[in-house]
Length: 252
Figure 1 (cartoon, rainbow, N blue to C red):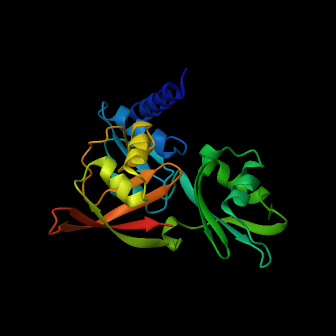
Figure 2: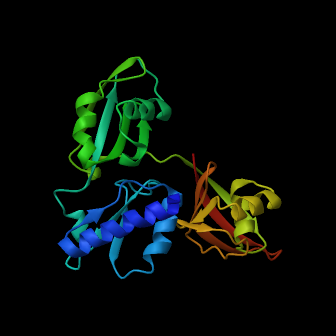
Figure 3: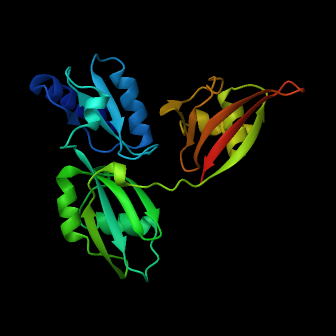
């Protein structure tokens, strides 16, 4: 089976679990490519689902399937969420990177698909974890790199304070075609933007885009794999020279 077929098989299993048992079911964490494929596949099914990763505007998310009696608001009231926030506090002497934390966690035998985004700050990091591995992670992660850490489950994702780092940029394009928008937002040449779009590296609002003439809506999130993400925040109208202007937040 291909990776896509394996993903569809998992989705089918979780759909049956939700429908037959009439309770919430969920996948493990998916990357942006898998999420895009999941959205396209699930659009053919009549079932309620939510992409959820714990943190606002996160990249890695699970698919949570909802029975008839539940909705997104109900999901937010659950005491027994399938995903929990895990805090890793480091000592005062270590300087640790995303790679350090991820390597230490995976060194415990925990697969990447069991973890969501890893958010770094000056005192450590916070991640989202599938609940079934969270306790094991907390009991066994006592060091990262050469430093010691204290790992524990937080009460809720609401207690997590995310410090967004971004820069604001004003862009000008001849039209809101995907190749023009990607070129301007990421400072690519037009040919480079075309290459990345046709190679399947560009996602707009979570969906993989492969057509260069796709019209990008305002307020869209645009992601280029390996190059980051931007959010189109303002439609600044048409300039005197007839070009479309818009403002973006580029995440650092």
